[in-house]
Length: 222
Image (cartoon, rainbow, N blue to C red):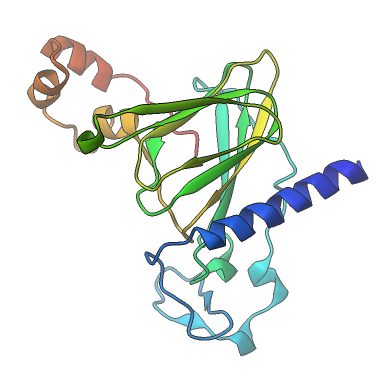
C-alpha cells in the first residue's frame, strides 16, 4: 500500500513539473507568489496570499478509481482551477483517466493546453492527428506502464485500452484550464444542432444518416 501511495505521489509531482516546463503564454502570469481564484462565480476578484490557506492548494482522491460503466468505458477526473483554486495563474492542471477493458477516451482536443500522458496500469493505444497543412498525418504508439506520450496543443488525440484488464493513466496539461472538445459530441450533439445538410455534405453521407447520428446519446466521460 505504501509503495502504491509513493508511486502516485512521485507520478503527480513529475507530471506537474513537466507540465510547468511546457507551459505556454495562454494563462495569465502571476505577479506575486500565487493568486488564488475566488470560488464565487459572480466575483471577478482574486484572493491574495494573506487570505489563502493550504486547502486552496489541496485536492483529495486521485488514488480512487472512477466508475467506467458507460458506453465509452472511460472516466476522466480533472484537477484544474475550477476545483483547485490555487492553480490560478500557475499554468498547469492534471487529470486521471480510468479505462475499463477496451475502454476509449474518444478523439478530442484541448484548445488551450499541451498534454503529456503517463500510463500507470494496462496497455494503451494512443495517437494524435496533425493539422490540414501537414496532411493530417497520424502518429500512434502502444504504451505500457511507465511510458509517456505527448499530445501537442489543439490537435485531435485519443487513448484506447487494448487490454482485457482495467487501465489507469495520468495526464499533465500546460494550462490551468485547458478545456476539452470531444469531436463527435461537438459535431453531432451541438446545441442547437448543426443543420443536417451541412454535415451530410461535409462527411459525404446521406442526410438521413446524419439525422440518425444526431439523435444518438453522445456520452461525455469528463
